[in-house]
Image (cartoon, rainbow, N blue to C red; front, top):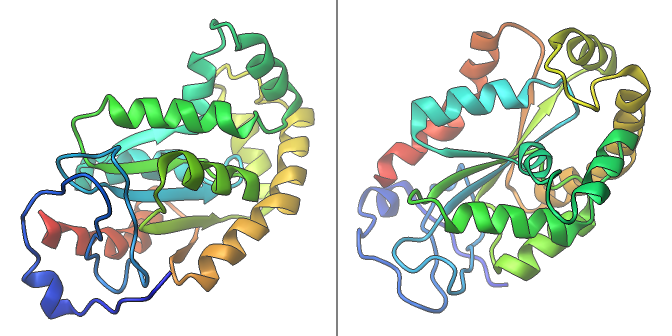
Length: 232
């Protein structure tokens, strides 16, 4: 993949012309992306702006995604919520058992749910929350959708704080119990660093200190998304 440096002046003069079938490049600001993003035929009218949101259970990424969506006009797609909604489907038993055990649902199943949700949206700006959880997730997403994220947020939070938050949130989720949380945290600590390292090397990762008030944390998030306003 060849590299292209995007200057601020080129961002300001960004063309509003719409995408056609085939390959297109989204001229994102250099603070958001350092390499081109390639697209196939999934998005015909406008190239998508995709942000992956990573963090362990209880890191506060879901709360911040709600604020980001409201403030900057993104569609918030939670991988976990999409899977929980599928529990009554033909694949529901696989999803339910996997979630209960704190393990990762097969990548193709998750990615196809995300793809379906993106296709049904009339927006072009997406926050994909809680994904990818491992390298297989990442590779499967790129293979099925033919696209990379423009940027990746990582909410960095101490394990003790995440456990406390999960056990106190009382949302009635099947995975909000101490045993499942410990399994999820173990898998996160073993598998997610590979994803974080990959996007760090790509110049796409934005690490957020996820300890503090909701507003304090959002103050760290805001600059990442403020640049997106210039693309409207």
